[in-house]
Amino acid sequence: MKKILRLLSEPRRKRLASAAVMNQAEFLNALAGNAQLHRWLRGQRTFQYFKNRYDLYADLQSKILGEESIDYLEFGVRYGDSLFKWSTIDINPDSRFFGFDSFEGIPEVWASVTGEAPKGSFSVGGVVPPNRRRPHTLCKGLVQRYVATVPARIQSPLKAGYP
Ligand SMILES: C[S@@+](CC[C@H](N)C(=O)[O-])C[C@H]1O[C@@H](n2cnc3c(N)ncnc32)[C@H](O)[C@@H]1O
Picture 1 (tube, rainbow, N blue to C red):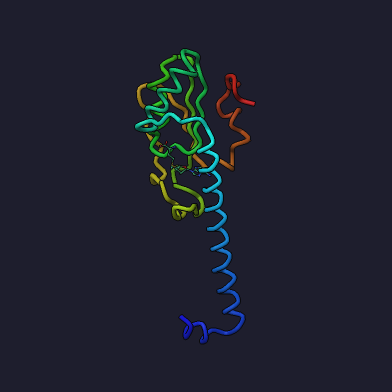
Picture 2 (cartoon, protein in one colour):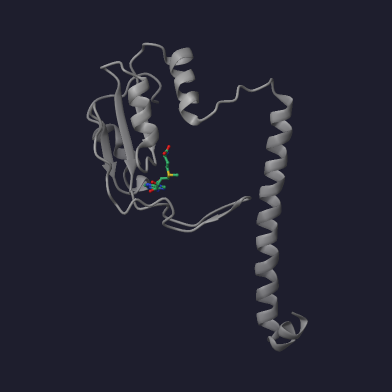
């Protein structure tokens, strides 16, 4: 490594060093954030754990939402696993389900402490999943391009909870 560094010009060495330190700084920052989160979690009352996310959804539905109708909006639905699950858990005929996605994966690299997902990860090749059983509104495109028009897209005011 030292030999390689010696072969590089001074400005190149500086650029390389600053890139390495910057990445380390980001990593250390993320690590510190993670440590803080865990410290905070330890200070909380014990959490209820669920076998999987669907059990969590069912618990929320039964304990919080009950029989009330809802407007469900999901930004980033991929195959629609969560969206379609919620619409079988919430069977109120007045509930509405909206999903927003480019269906082309994440638009930029996503770096976290556990690793890096390249641009395009989670893509389903631009294919909008077909509706299952009851109607869902699926809007295709980059969320940041149309988020301001969401109320217009869904055509009528959202139910309680929407600002
Ligand atoms: C991890 S997947 C979502 C999984 C889904 N929520 C579930 O419960 O199964 C992330 C999705 O977000 C979408 N996505 C990420 N950023 C987006 C953006 N800015 N605009 C549109 N879609 C986006 C990707 O296309 C991908 O389908």
